[in-house]
Each structure stands twice: as structure tokens, then as C-alpha cells.
Image (cartoon, rainbow, N blue to C red; front, side):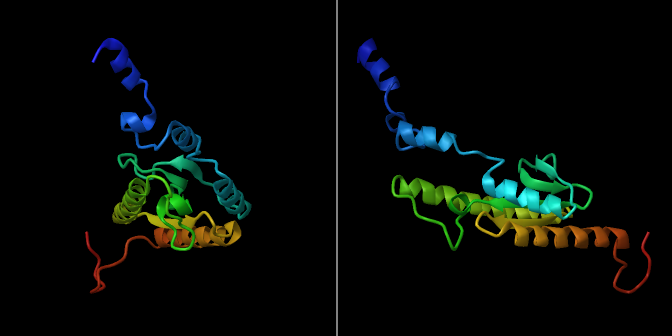
Length: 170
């Protein structure tokens, strides 16, 4: 292969170069998807804020864990994730991709597995997790968030539980 041919292969479409995208247009479309400040996320944040709750946005609940929650209540140790129906495989609204279906099915399954792992790791570290689907009513979701935060704050005020025999441990 001479220099002109190798240059042509390098400049080929994304699919020819082995990209995850099935075409240059798909790649551009996917890259334009926002990872935060989406309409459902903004609606949830407004509803939670209207209930008087204050939170951090797009933060890691555990600094060492490379997972970002949409809303984080650091003192109460509550992490809220707003999951997209396509990306996280909503049982009601998930659609199967027409192009590159095998890749996307695998991607969604990896996302779901990571979600379960995230929930487990946060729970082990003493965090409560609230998962909200993007199609859920933001007012109802905000009520769930408020309830979880209130329960977490009450649990913190009670302090650590006593051993089952009622004795104090040092």
C-alpha cells in the first residue's frame, strides 16, 4: 500500500476506523448528548429545590469512586441518580437500537451492571441511593428524594445503633 492509500484508510468513516459509532453522523449526534443539565434533570432539581432542599450537582459521593451522582446531599449521605430510559434500560420505555443493535444492547447491560455496583458500593459506605427514571413526574420524584433525605437525617441524629443485647460497646 502506498502513502496515498494508507492516508485514505486513516481518513475513512468512523465505522471503517472501528469506532463505536456506525457513522460519522451518529458519532456527532451521540457526542452532542448532554451528560448534565438535561430537561428532566433541571425539572427534578427545580422540584427538589422548591421543597427547600439544597444539594450539590454532578458530584462524586465518594471521592475515590469514579461515579457521579446527579444530586448529592453530602451531610445526609444521599445520592440521587436520574437515569435515562434508553441508556439504563427502562422497563417501560427502553427501545432497541435499529443500527448497531448488538453494541447498544451490550452498552445498556454494562450501564445496568454498573448501576447495581454503584448502589452496592454506596450502601456499603453508608449512603442512601435514590434512582429516578427520566420519565417520572419530577414532583413525585422530589417527594421520594425529600423522604429519603429526611430519613437519613433522622438516622444520623439517632446515632449508631446499640448491639442487639442492649449493652454499650466501646
